[in-house]
Image (tube, rainbow, N blue to C red; front, side, top):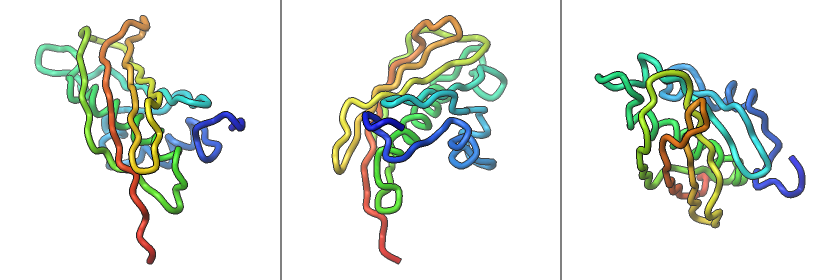
Length: 148
């Protein structure tokens, strides 16, 4: 990453998909994958399919929140010294703007605040046509790792 990057280490979507989105956990079950890492944002995508729809055949709001929290958590975790700190979700909210019946949705996480003890992330979810589907604000606590 360049000197202007908010991330503490250089990281690629491939590395995240191999080390952070793992078998047996929700993100993998929902088909979430990281697709882009910029100097101050991350983008993940999720299919709209049998795993992520509600009974009337549209994207489930809870799936949107799982996508938002996944991309926000991963992005936040790369903004701290991962040997000394870790992050946990503290609060998330969302406004669902339009339904999606098929394809993919893409969540872009950008920071609103990167503090020593908390971060606030803005996450916008768009459909394949780049229309806004959901907006979310996600707050994480930055905690110290315990000495072993």
